[in-house]
Picture (cartoon, rainbow over the protein chains, first blue to last red):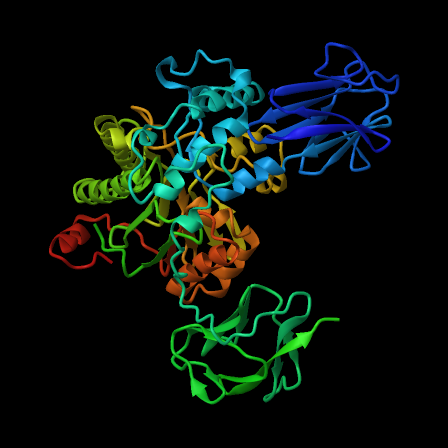
Length: 311
Length: 279
């Protein structure tokens, strides 16, 4: 769960978990976060939390709200953002959410109202996004909200959605009644456990694309960039930096492409009757890893691939 | 129906990604009738695969059966609607019913659902139906355009001006869709028809692609590799995996090699009837 850490002159005063969809900040006592200082307006700012995202809004305060030193009116809070109200600082910490989410962050779910009122009896405020997260994570529990689909008033419906989704997502998924064998590591993980690692439960399959990882020299971090130097023909001497994920070589008659990947550079034939030649050997349709000083021949033009140190 | 496979080329790739043990995406194509179907399933255990599998199998079969009887380029006499649009609405509705019933009858499938994006090409047009956050993009010239609008929480937030597209990429709420096939007794699909031109490329993809690969790199890949569609498809999957491959990745690529006007006259229909091409 995301939280705010209130500090003054480097001294931590208090932590505030962002459990509510609307957290108000101001000098007056009815605020969720009360900062009793004259530089802070009565109703100074508000944080709207929708599931795992939090948005900060200045409520027209006299002295303004800063985030990381910049004055803001509305701001989408990111982990470690520092919110300043007068001399007070509120640090936004979201890493708990980040970890949980990254474990399975694209497990698609549908926002949905709780069917048949199941779980509707529970107070929405108690259902914090983080609590619902692990359930959804492991089972891709489906949750849809019809209100969200129909409502034109998006702002309002989003808040409803957030509330209802956290309720609905909290229902135990049907599958948890009997975890099937094989799903073991994932299904059995208790909701509060460290982020589930599906990768550990089952090793990832090899990449679909024909990529021979062996032998390629990877771009050293911050060190070198793959470059092509033309050796023959009218453009001899010209250099072509391979800065994009894909660089096309040749035109019409014979086309090849060089892909820049985390594990190195790979050349692949794209079109044309003849295939590129690397160090005197004809390639086939598979991607071929390039090594420093490989010589490529394409449509009669010779060129050298090399790793150029970056300035 | 005219066989479209000479005018339209298709290539596909699907992969579990680098993190997930299962591939819950399903894809299907039939270039002869100009059909491409992609679904990203969701639900506990293997229910996601079941839901997306039902959707793709049913949409493919029903569309094939329907276009054998109804010409998709004709207009409905009463509503004036393009038949391709009503065909898509109908088959998506049937897929919804089928998944909803399967989910209700088998406890292990309870709550399963799927996103769905379907493209049906005919008469120099492309009709696109979708539910959820699977997308269809068009590359025309140097411009990549997303023709579908996600049914997702993030899209609603973008539409309401609450967040920008840039912010959306950093959101923790990427995985929340507001519509899916098979979750409710009825589903509303968004269906639109666009003119298709020679040289156009279309990309259908699951969010495992567009969450991991920037639009700019999708554009670069499609334009660099349009001469080699299977390579373009596998390259997109590889890029998603190189960037972490956190979800299943599926892509269908369609390239319009030449115009494909419908064979309207009865002579050309007769030719088609006898197994020859109408053009």
